[in-house]
Length: 315
Image 1 (cartoon, rainbow, N blue to C red):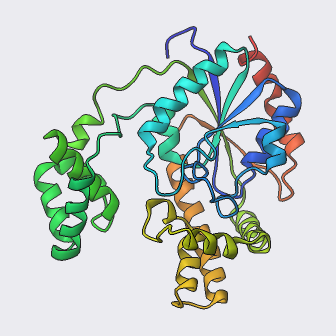
Image 2: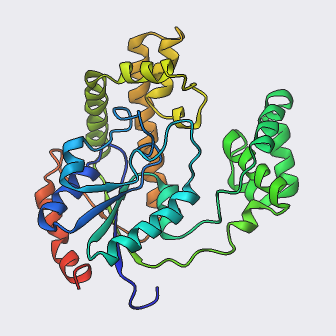
């Protein structure tokens, strides 16, 4: 990147690996830190336990941005986050503070640090018609249509990925141009140079951490949280509810599975989600990987990069 751009620390990794703890530990050394949360679910109000948001005490300790910014039925996207996130980062730098990005949502992070085309392009009527078409004709019909109008995008989208197929066709119908073409054009200027730190743990250690986190969520009232959301009228088909923990408990509340089955599925699906996250991040050669021990000795881990932060981020 162009010389002279400020460097931006980006902390990534799978769910339950300890990213928030790591960031809070850094904040003990650098009081100027403000966190940009790159989490596609923590943006939603009322969804606190199941998204593992930083606690109110942690958010009082360190300023966090992009948490609780919209309700579950309000539209938001990676493209919007990328634009708003860059604007917030510039503002934090201008105030003499240190922004750091913390999160496990790969697309949000890519949008922020690499740029995407304007994801705000949308038409609810077009989207609804495509959804109805998928229901009536089958997803295969939409996928064949996508292959005809945008073979490049179709090659990168799984034939069963309903959301991405519909999204690609929606953009094509609105703009008359393939989404794959738009994604490679008009990338925004990135006003900083990202420096990545990835946290990774041995698989069985991570899975134990996931099991423990799910158990803690249940104890804190995850079932009750989902029930409140349902009672407030938030339907299980909302994009916000396509989240591990919420889908399984909705199924329990509808009498489709038992409570024990819901808990088991949450643990299994969280493990699978962590695996998908690692597949995404492992493809990015810019990430420097650090491995905490099972107890997450964050102080020791943070110390490994304190010198780097002092020399590169506090110039």
